[in-house]
Image (cartoon, rainbow, N blue to C red; front, side, top):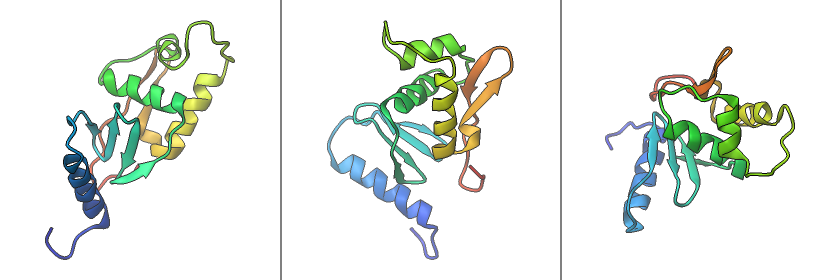
Length: 128
């Protein structure tokens, strides 16, 4: 890194070095300033860890695995909940709200009448 440097850049570099030094296969999913490691279920935004609930992680992973595709509410519920789980009518909306609050409003786009999709990748200069 060249001085002066942004702390987000430093955090991202440290995160990358730590991941490489762990000696495991790198299967981290990157989406702009967001990183998600499905094997450890760790999420980072701007190189900083973000705590997500199990259902928020499942929702994020479903969206990341289907970039560019619109997923219906039922498809997302199938990804987030197990067979036989009772799901309240607004449960998915609550999880999406929490995910947006933790990762930024643009992470999940609502497609009126169809469902949801992953928002565009945000660069370092964009607002979350």
